[in-house]
Image (cartoon, rainbow, N blue to C red; front, side, top):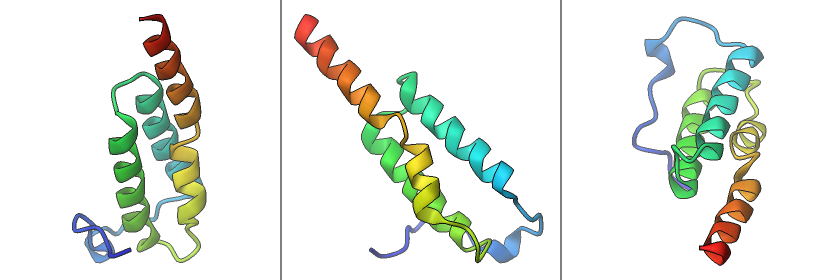
Length: 88
């Protein structure tokens, strides 16, 4: 995959993010998926683009783990959508 065009240059930011910050961001994205604010396709794009950018800020950053946490409830949302379609 080619890098996302919206990847930000890490040199522009001098604040060191910690695991706690990454978890907060991932959980926020996951919550937006779960409450329907962010549709599943957009969520995957957002999680991937943020993962790409954050990976550049910290060599120890685990992009795959971050994206998985962002999309943790995606299956539950898909199941809920299927149920709503069957009922409605």
